[in-house]
Image (cartoon, rainbow, N blue to C red; front, side, top):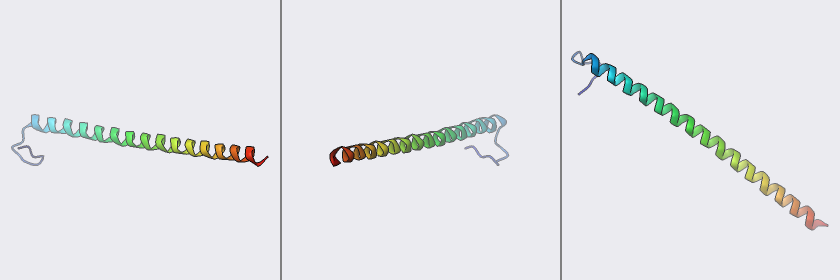
Length: 66
């Protein structure tokens, strides 16, 4: 079993674990950015739909008021 602090850990195991840890950090960063991008797109879509519904109701209201 690998341990960061164990003196019997070989240099190869330590370097391999550092590479895996860096890959995990990159993956976490990518997922975080992906989550932020999804939230931004989702909020823009909801805002656009809200504006569309508002303009539609306003147009229909003006049309039927005359």
